[in-house]
Length: 132
Length: 46
Image 1 (cartoon, chains in turn brown, red):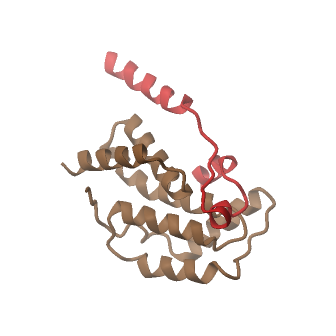
Image 2 (tube, rainbow over the protein chains, first blue to last red):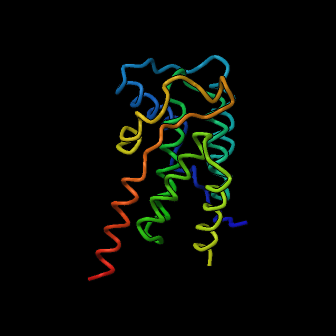
Image 3 (spheres, each protein chain N blue to C red):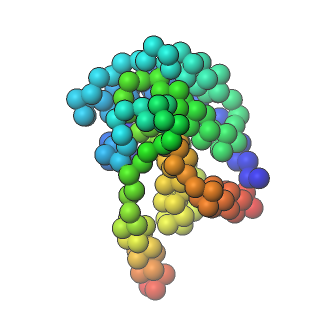
């Protein structure tokens, strides 16, 4: 199992996460507001992991869990998928453009909760190639 | 933020995953990937 361990979430403190959501909500005239049940658990999970050394797949799972916890009233999926797509672009210079696009796309699918087993295997395969 | 806004229409506004346990994402299609591959093909040919 490929690891690629580093503090992937380090650049995104919770204020930035909130600001991304605020911007997305503003764009669609949607209410930017924390939820009563999901905000605190998601914020806690995020902050517990933000500076941790994580395998890339673990970082993606944290984004997925936060998406599932729904800390905001609207656009949770886009908020965390955008963060994952952003931190994963760090790997792009090491990849051909098509592979970088596929990697970004799979990261988005994982966080959105729509990734297939085939996509997860494809992710493992791209990451394994990167680790060589 | 630019990428987040670019892909915004592919996501549901509502917390679908939290409510149903199933994620939602509108497909992007393969046009972008095909364009990238066509570009790679051209640069490999030169």
